[in-house]
Image 1 (cartoon, rainbow, N blue to C red):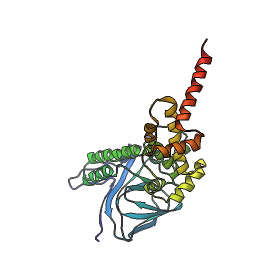
Image 2 (cartoon, rainbow, N blue to C red; image 1 turned 180 degrees about the vertical axis):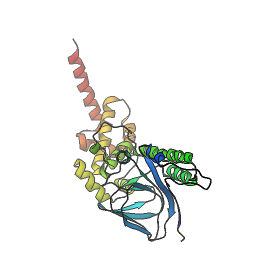
Image 3 (cartoon, one colour; image 1 turned 45 degrees about the vertical axis):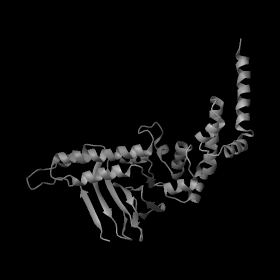
Length: 304
């Protein structure tokens, strides 16, 4: 397999053959600054590092697999995921020997870069995240690579594409760009991502094994992390979240139990009823009737 790599590096104070000059101060007028980007189809077993960076670098894996190693451990990364290299952090990354990865990347720096990355979901403990809009990010990087480096205006075009990528990353995180939470609370973890994924997708047919694979870690490791964070396994959390949503639906609607079961991710109404009884000590219908009677008593007691 032949290795093909295309890379653009920012050139400060460079002059083109026709005499156009790119002033150095153009690179300091934004809080986030593009540094370099590229696309590479790696050879089997191709490795980079050990190395440290002065800038942030995110790799987006378009195809294949590989391994990232940093001070926190080794992380398998596969198609549809992205991994970050933090400045000053020793790292090495290696393409799989059988199915080597094909990735694109972008390097950047700036006074807001660290805050942005933590808002996206990255942290030293969580350097690998899934990315749902990888094709669009790839297009933005390819657009940067097609720009010449001979005109001052091209700097702003590269900056525009770079900010488009940041917008896609924030969209990928599915959380507000602005947050009143303290900085340390913005750090995601695999457990936090799994919990939020369950909250968004509890009504779909999902399994914890599929969720762990989606994140890129083993089911046992994900279970360990979630237990450490909330005290129960992700499977228990999924069941509890579905049933609590069902209980709310039973209290506040007249929808058939069968419909509520489906809305909460249960294709089998009997399985839903059994799970509900284990949690609440009564069937969904009994729960609804008892809640209705309790509400009637409260309404009567409020009458003058």
